[in-house]
Length: 89
Image: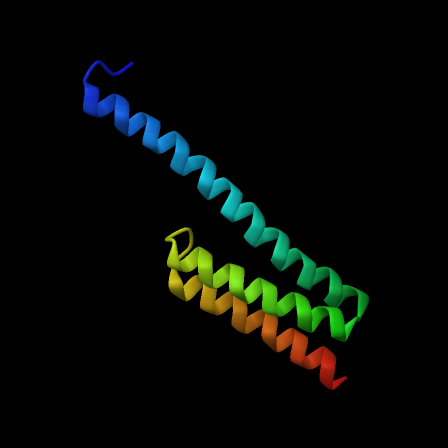
């Protein structure tokens, strides 16, 4: 256990940040999963609506440093391609 005051503060900050990031990561994954479920069901309308929400969460996660910008962009691009393919079919 740390004895230095600044180290104790860093530990407190890390705990808060970890909890915040867990919530963000969970929310992001849930949104992506909703798109996956709608795609699997073949529901184009729900897939499109879920895609908008997932894109927002992925962009937010990237802006907060939870995932890298290119990672978020790649996920959005791949999901969007699948949604468009479903709508076109």
